[in-house]
Image 1 (cartoon, rainbow, N blue to C red):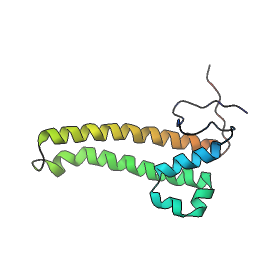
Image 2 (cartoon, helix red, strand yellow):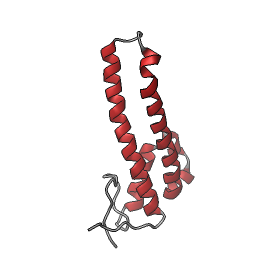
Image 3 (cartoon, rainbow, N blue to C red):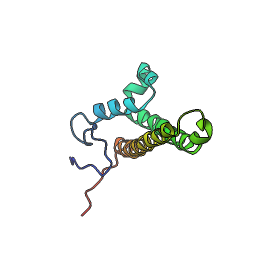
Image 4 (cartoon, rainbow, N blue to C red):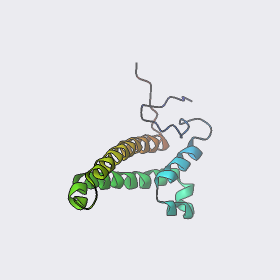
Length: 122
C-alpha cells in the first residue's frame, strides 16, 4: 500500500494504508474536537464519524475567527489600548491560518477514511 500523502496532510497522522493510520487519525481529530467528544464511545470508536463532526467543528471555528477579526475594533475600541488590538489581530491571523490548515487536513483524512487514495503528482 502507498504511503503517499498530499500537501496539507496533518503531520500527526500516519499515512493511509500504514500501521496506526486510524489510531493517529482519531487522536488528531479528537484534539480538534470539543473535549467532551472523548466521553462518547461511539465517537471515539468510529473515525469516519469523528472526521465528519470534527470538520463541522473546525469550519465553525473558522467562521467565528472571521467574525472576531471583522468586529474586534468595534467591540473593544476604546476599551483596550490600540497596541493590544493590533497584537490581538495578529494572534487571530495566526489562529486563522492554523484553522484553515486544519480544515484541509480534516478533509484529507476524511477522504482517506472513505477509501480515497491520493496519488503523487508528477
